[in-house]
Structure formats: structure tokens, C-alpha cells
Length: 100
Image (cartoon, rainbow, N blue to C red):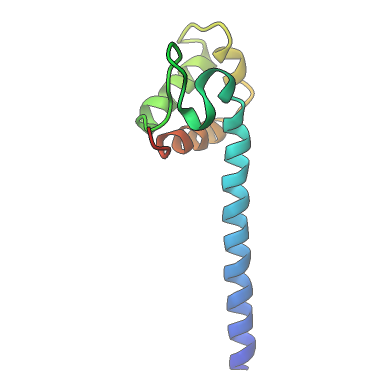
């Protein structure tokens, strides 16, 4: 009985770890769409806005403002509408967590 519980616990922890890894991978896929303008992992070339290491709440607010049309843009308003608010939150957190 103890072995069964240990096995179930190990399987549960393993599944949770795989789920967390899949979530990180999905956020990287979403963030990759930003690379053309903002650079790989948010480290942009001169002349473009770098996103790496910026404040998560500031990034999220900008994304939400683009999505709602409160902040004018040439393309960001279109791109941001393709994501849910939760996805934008995860994208902002991803870039905030990157080293400058």
C-alpha cells in the first residue's frame, strides 16, 4: 500500500512538472512572434524597444492598451487582439523574467 501511494505521488509530481514545462514552451511560442521587432527573448536591436527585464505590470498595461485601442500603433493593436488577457499576462511575465 505504501509503495502504491509513493508511486502515485511520483506520477502526480512528474505530470505536474511536464505540465509546467509545456506551459513555458507555449509562452515561448507566443513570445517568438515578438522577435521580428523586439528581438529574440526581448533583447532588441538599436532603434527598437527592448522588452527583456522590463516591469511585468508595465508591459501588460501596454499590451492591454494596444488591444483595446487606447494606445495607437501600426501593428501592435492587431497582434495583441490575437491573445486573451491571460495569454498577454503570461507573455508580459516571460519578457519581464528575461535578462536585459
